[in-house]
Image 1 (cartoon, helix red, strand yellow):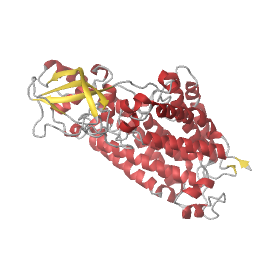
Image 2 (cartoon, helix red, strand yellow):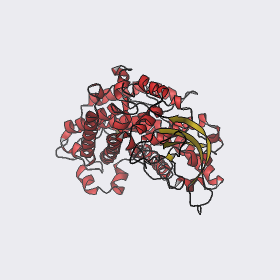
Image 3 (cartoon, rainbow, N blue to C red):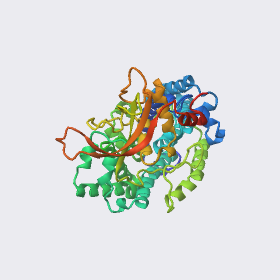
Image 4 (cartoon, rainbow, N blue to C red):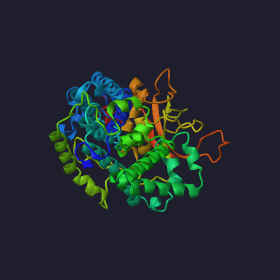
Length: 497
């Protein structure tokens, strides 16, 4: 019975690393696909929050990124395509097949390129799952190829990451909103979540007792069981299964990008080869790599030198001090990075749950008096008869930000003024972020934004999914001919002279 850099008691982690890295490659693929499809319109040179303007306001260490070299849309797409190619390379296992250098280089480039997007993506990339992917991806750099022993200390680093994700989310709920302590938050959550799916309506109709039991299970999964991630095998594997079951339940209830999917991938660190060799469909590979605890006798690589692993762990421990203090603080911060490289962060979700759902509806017209025609988005509620789509682990970033924007006046979300300008200019990239365009032949002369309160219909026999009530005007009719509006666009750098 030994415990050291590469082993822990009688456990081995060949398959653990294999499943973790394959899953992480899949998450990277989705992330880069989103960047390819959406980043030029969101943060490109003429996007809603242009990267060139942002980099004029910050220093390199505030936002370390390859985009300091070039901010063109061609460069954005090139990096996204490179990320997609590397993620496929990792997903199919070629990153492991060519030894330590190829493995380290593949995972390092994936991390470097995606961190370049995250660090300049501003509000559109300010989500916890973005930095969560970066942290998991950085640990993957040091795990080594398939013919090297997996360092056990890095498995512990992944468990520490999983602990922060789950325990942080649980504590922010208990501290944040009284409805979590009363077990009543889920009564509102399924109707007011950022991006409902087709099952969210049905979850919202479940009886109150079931919602309370579900909230209690939430606290069990996020506050109690994370402690057991560091316990011996039976306790740890049970805790890991609870974490995965909890994430699958959330996935089934709505769209939360890849947050739950990457958490499941990280939760693989709770299982060693004794279990994974029985439940994974890669038994031939398992036999080749000796997952029963016997390392391969031929072609075994040492992977990265032990001092490199120890140095990395020391860095993780030192950077963990502030996040650990944050976990026990009465003023706990949610989804916060304490270093510009996002190596150790705090996480959390739904520390407060909104009780009502307001939606911004954009309408266009050729006259300030109407008639008005409504724009649709790809995922966010608009047309009350449209079934909410199932899009996760994909993520429509503009739709999600529209959910945030509806909670406060537009001047807290100035990018929405640029969104209106892009629609008035018939910007093809921004229109690509939208759903149905009611002005396919010509752009409107005016656009306004109205605020509606959305509620689920009460019966599944109803032909509509939503019912809505007018709340008020969010933005008055705006035109590019309006000197005040045009002046704001010029001042912000969104419109050329």
